[in-house]
Image (cartoon, rainbow over all chains, first blue to last red; front, side):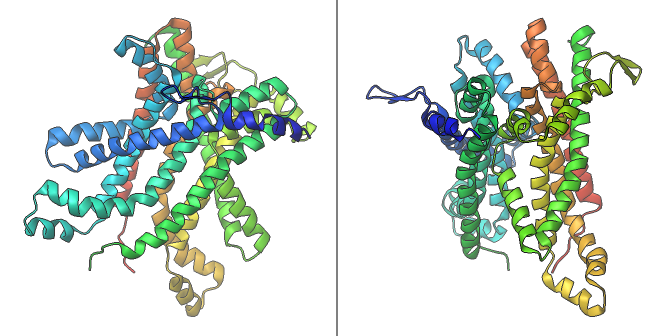
Length: 238
Length: 246
């Protein structure tokens, strides 16, 4: 066994050649596990707002608001992420007229892709609340938007937190696809070290899988516990 | 795009995607049922194994698993199996004629890439399927089992006639969506060179320099498949789903 190769390259798996200084973006060329986490976090942050907008649009009764959201969600949910990444990679230069780096491309793709799934979570969360909540808040004089903002969404979003965490886990797993475009994140560092050393494939891939497993498993069990806690406070139909 | 070489490649890619997904789905169902049954046996080590299996394979990326099975498993699998896998290429030589079309190339060849892809997809999906099955069976209240035992059915009879018919009804829609996920996930097998839709699309892109058309057609194929599957789920929910109240 060649575990010493994994030990030697472990810092490379975690950081790659990331350089940090006091010039504006502060983190230059994020690589390794660090880049995976940055991709996942930026992805989920963007996807939350995109998904919230798309989910609420899908709940609308006006067809010209509802249908764009329906088409967006159904199309994205029907295609593999890999296809979206390739599509965006080749299409973005045509639209914007300049080259888009692979890292930015994948961030956009993760936002667009996860946004569709978050939209479904939002829709399900809002629909899961009893109708009485909306009726009561309309009855007490709030407008539809106000009722949404102050009564429905605070409750719905709190109930959605476990699903968001699950979505974040699956996004973390999906960040490995950035490796195919050549973004040097955890999987790519694994490929690099594997190709260089050639004898330690087993150890390297086990180590990579364990790194992913660590973060995903912690989050999954956290979301399970959260779900059990939150279900006690949920408003229900009687 | 719709004639000559690109069209033929795309069609082969579609067939390969269908081939790899159906084979993996069948294997994953079997493996998933085995894992799920192991989880419910009273024998502790089996339970631990099943728990470790599902947790590990659900929480690591499929891409890493594919790389593992393709690059790394060679070092731990016995030589006999490795040699057998590498010789598979010579067992099914081309060309094939099917659907009135002559396949010269890769299709239907059980080469080592295809086998690796099938193994990776099977293991990954079976972990999800096992969880779905377990969730379905656990969603049936425990007193159903107790009542059927009290009526005089044996344990297996109770499962066969009371629990499973109800559980299956709950489980089937998530299973169908897992099948859809499997078809979408099979696109990842392009990284090891399985000639399915995405692989063929990138191939067409680099041979004929028509990225937009190639990926549009790939998108169209995936959308048709997924719309068909969600249509199946809707039809199933409409016709067979019975609302049960406990």
